[in-house]
Picture 1 (cartoon, rainbow, N blue to C red):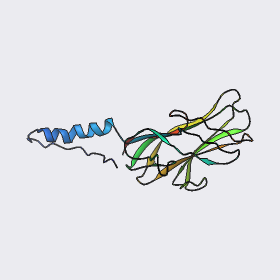
Picture 2 (cartoon, rainbow, N blue to C red):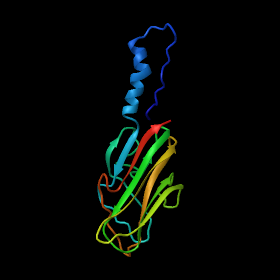
Picture 3 (cartoon, rainbow, N blue to C red):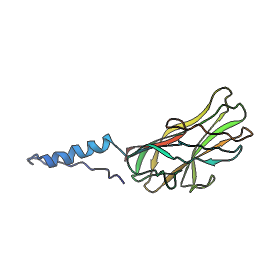
Length: 179
């Protein structure tokens, strides 16, 4: 868990010291230059069946500065360790197929259940023929330490589709913006 540093105050006539300056500015700037953030993505294979909400497991990370994701247990989860306002992005890319719709649903504290916890954001788009179908959203969200977030995808092409994988392809990102 990252500790959000507090600034130090000076009083009139106080002697300026290196430790006081570090506490009042350097520690805060160091934190702000590398805030809690994570990018977890699907690096392997995920094959959602038609008409079934499927939990996305993220087996890879581009970065994780606050131990918010594990590639070995509960790999579907981003768990908040530092409360605050976050910039949240989730996205999923489906291969070309002209039938039906593609959907991504971000859920809070769902414990892997497609109808568990709270649905925070759902994006649905019509399938594209001749090109991959991309579903995603970015927004700000107030997060509390201990809460976890999971992504579920749904497609109704009439058959199983293999999700496209990669860091900027099927992933979730959280970046701390402030308290």
